[in-house]
Length: 212
Image 1 (cartoon, helix red, strand yellow):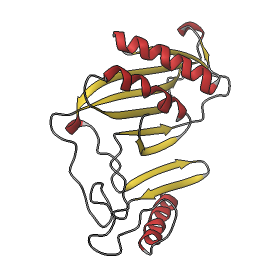
Image 2 (cartoon, rainbow, N blue to C red; image 1 turned 90 degrees about the horizontal axis):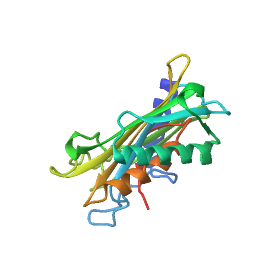
Image 3 (cartoon, rainbow, N blue to C red; image 1 turned 90 degrees about the vertical axis):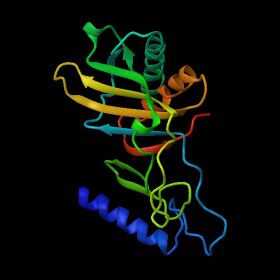
């Protein structure tokens, strides 16, 4: 599987440089020409599926600490799991799975780097790799690495896991990061619930995220 993903990424890079269509960005024809890259996304998602979640998901949702914000997020997660996945939200004693999460505000320089040379999505159907060939604002094959987030800025982070209650094994885990600007922590935090739940059962690597 690792060889097939690496081969797919290499192939896409070569096709993009040639240049070709698809998701890859093309290098400019001449210096000073129009830039094809889009601005860096303010957020990103990284998720990993270890085994498919069951169709009939009886789940207990709980934060690692019961702060006022986390209790609001708990209700949001319960609603999204029921609406999107048809999950049955139950008390812990009757649940087959535990959906556990934590949230925090971290300095931007401590958050993982945003999509570097692109992003990747891997599932049972194969691999999809998006590669940035040229950009002066993002990491790219031709433009090189760009600078990390500004010192002093903050990022909101949610980590969530779906755990099999009987075996204790993690079925799925996800992390969402989003830049904060001003007093908007609660709005950003609650807006990250849906993108995270919607990736349940999927594996993505540093997928760019833009909230409405």
